[in-house]
Amino acid sequence: MALFLRAAVTEVAPLTDRMRAIRLAGESLRGLAWRPGQHIRVNVTPPSRWLRNPGDARRTYSIWDLDPDRGLIDLAVLDHGDGPGSV
Image (tube, rainbow, N blue to C red; front, side):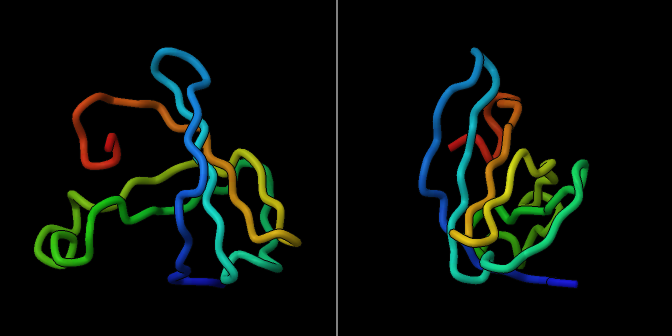
């Protein structure tokens, strides 16, 4: 079980007015296995903020698609408006 992995947001595209496709990429994602319906928790604020207020920093997303050979995870994210993950 992987506990902490580092990745970067490499693409963001609108799916609908309130949904966005977000692609994460990173070497630590290579070789991951997953099952449909599995989710991940993402820290969406800088470490200096989430160490003080961890509840504000993490969001849970379902994995839309995973390419373990290329180290890519695709998410479909509902945009709630003005939260920490909206920027």
